[in-house]
Image 1 (spheres, one colour):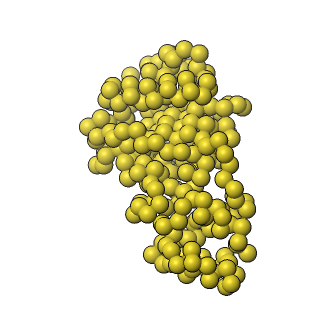
Image 2 (cartoon, one colour):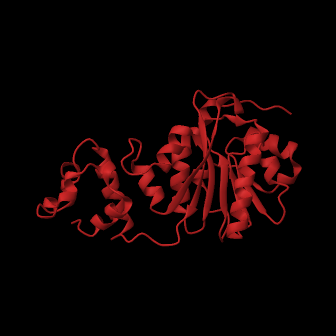
Image 3 (tube, rainbow, N blue to C red):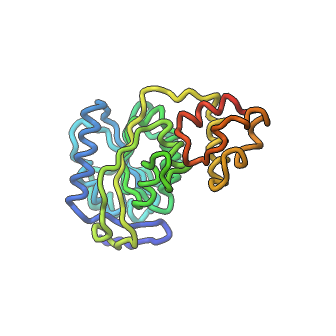
Length: 255
């Protein structure tokens, strides 16, 4: 049974067995350290990773795949996946388990950032996420303050998760090969909650600061603070120079 590749869905299917094994090793480390045995794979596609995940012992496994043709292919090729596959977009589903689960996948590149924000929505249930991204996106998620690629997604993810850049994946590991390098990262949920006035204030501040990242913070976020507060020296900095904790502290001074 054959399947077709759909560019509209950002499909680049993994074919490198060595990369699959390295991803599964990272997963097994996470299972051992968290003792979590529920797993959802996002975008299984042709099943390169799926065939390594299905045989894992003591795992409650589900997969979510939007492309009906791929669902048919997977059910035909890997009968064990029957009744474990959700034929929808990851962005449209409710949490697939009622208790803690791990998210894993070679994420469709055209919605990979949105998938991360979905994980953020589910963070109370998702202690670990292991994902493949365009390298540029993976680097942005893992970026530290002062870096040119440090931005909104770096801060909003790292506020709740520690990010570990695991390894690069070259274009030749996929069919068809993408025009860019890829990277695998692992997110581990932080034990301590960030001390913020509210999530709404925090998200608003970060997004407003980076919408005009070339300006000083004073000019970028002046609508959010009283004039007296804006006299503080921290507002001489640009958004990319602030740590997550500094953004968190500033939420308490917002009007």
